[in-house]
Length: 133
Image (cartoon, rainbow, N blue to C red; front, side, top):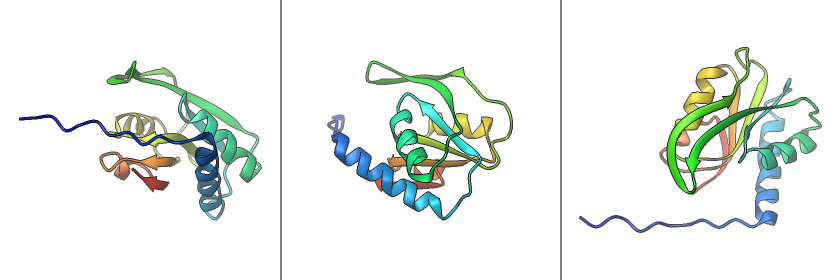
């Protein structure tokens, strides 16, 4: 059985900025938010854009390692957070398989999880996203 060819969805900085702003506008109606938790590293840039758009100054990170080079590996928490996440907005750039999202959601079960992009397998893990890829 032949494997399915890899497909790529290249995104320019301008497109990421536009889509992250659109995410912020969608999230504005759902707030107010206590702060933002960026999933490092991919969520750092979108979290910054969302924070600027929503005028949120309280920003923290959850540091997760889930890739080795470009291959998904075992998900590991490098830096976590305490609390249940109530009132907090968790931001990532992309939900792929949902493994990272499920791990972060278990850590912060009451947080609102938002991504700029969502693949079909990970889509059920997020509360809000802009584009399905």
